[in-house]
Image (cartoon, rainbow over all chains, first blue to last red; front, side, top):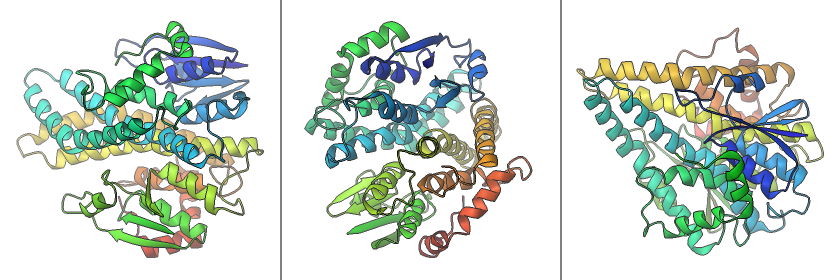
Length: 222
Length: 222
């Protein structure tokens, strides 16, 4: 039996979406963020690491988006719909690359941006000009430039491919989606520069399983 | 033909080590960091993303530690020595989990710590007390606690397993090693609390392929 512990507006949305794509039977428990906008302590009772996603499988708790996706694909994707076969080399490579890239390269920059936004908003008034200046320098030297390059690489890939793994939708799109929603937060991605990314985003969100996931887990809103 | 572009003291060390474990034929080009301790512009000529590792395979450039590892395992690990077989469920799960965890969970916290250390060291004298205070708050609220939990989980796993995937050395150890070296930087990990992690670290570094990788790519020193 699968039991997903879902924290609102978090990475566990991906797992609801994949479970819906797989038409899997699962139990869902939803958790609200606390006042500090963090995971509530109740999630620590499921696993001390305390962060979403957590997927209970029998008596074990699985962590880590990338791993949970690979686990579900291995055991529940009986018709091999959501991961390209090993023998389709180009699609296998694209799938594997983007599955890692989303959390290893793209998300860390977005999280760092979020942390600095938080540092500024929580600074006392007298300190705010300084923390804003620090934020500006980090954005300039360590976030913005790297993020632009990543987005350009994604845009280029999606200008030639309908989905991240190529012609077919796959779990790599699920893994990438949340990161792209993060990159599109705030003022949003430039509509002409990243037209293919934004069209792909829409294409993801038109899927029936995605809509069911939103009904069950709530809309992502960073 | 494989051609690895290696940036000193960076994630590409992993790929040298794996190539040595695989006894693969490869060309190695080493790059020194510039004065700002970043990747030199010459690396951008190989691929605009400009970060290590980059593995040239024929006319393509592969990026992303996790993906490059999976690629090399798929094509060069003919005797299936460095990744557990799909049929060995426990080992497959451990391998897959730690392969993702290293870059998706552990490294981002370590990189964030590094960024704040840099922010403090580059602050003008008058600003330093404030940037130090900000650093302290981020360390307390967003880094330290999460890192401790991750290290505890790793320590617990290694108290029951010789290697990250279980009884056998695998590429998951290579992926985790660099992150553990990062966590052990500065004052170092607590020797009694993390005894199993430190013993595992030593065990990694005693391997012949590791020693050859150090000779070719230089010692990691964060």
